[in-house]
Image (cartoon, rainbow, N blue to C red; front, side, top):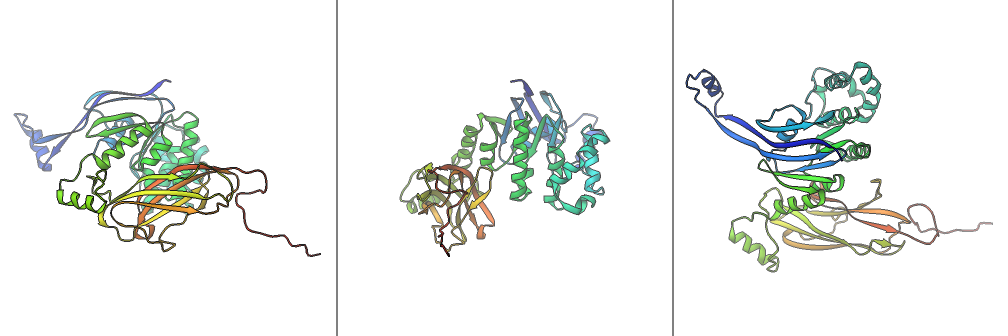
Length: 405
């Protein structure tokens, strides 16, 4: 496959001034005295992206991901190193970037198209398609300064994804959209990927990276820490985020081990934002028949004394992401362990009433009645339902036939 992005030893150094006045002092200094400290955002990064790849880019905030993307798009120039980008780039880096707040959504579509090198006629031919994809109703003719962040995301994504780019760059833009819009965007990105578009996808939702991307790189402190198949890189990154650096408070760790039956594999993550995680999910069988039991066993860990309002949900979807069924422990008033340690819960459907087809299982842990997602595993397992022909449709419902005459 041909290389479409070639990054060689790229370095990006920012000058950090403690005071804006220091810039002026430096400019006027006869002795060329430096009034800044250097921050190296990228430290000699090298990698290649082949045409048609979907590359996930992982890394903590401040690791250098956004700087790298801005260099690829030409917004920033590298301090050192070489970069070659072969093809038309469409990027969503920051919400509202390139938008004039006083222009309407329709006018901003034309403005963005012009900035990407399209003629007025070309953008007019795409206008209706973009408006329908954004789906923001009458707001398309309102100034974008009145838009919510979700509307910004919809319009920005609609413009970027409907201009037939050779390279599409998406930097956390999906995070502000609702689930329906996220699904719509992912489906469109899949369509572009199948048609040969190269996609660079930055997301903290590692399951999205694992399932959508075929390749991934992990950037750590301005360096490429790992690269390769997306599933392998995601696993390395998740392990690092959870287990690489254990908190130094020995009493706290000791307390945890005592409460988890001295399980030496239980380790508190260094990242304080991770307060719970799903560690393993198993199903009893990947080949089922209607009325067979479906069992989903979920293991999870909690890393603080207690999580108030903690709940667990299991959902079944079709391959097209049609929602089939999705109860959770909060809705059904089921009490599950919510204190520090490692826990296991089994979810059982005694008689599965689905008819033939393939289905996926999602598992999520939440708090605050499901408003705050602590971790979500999309399509963590799939199963197939097969039967000898005895009915049609998707579900079997109890019923009877009565002859009235």
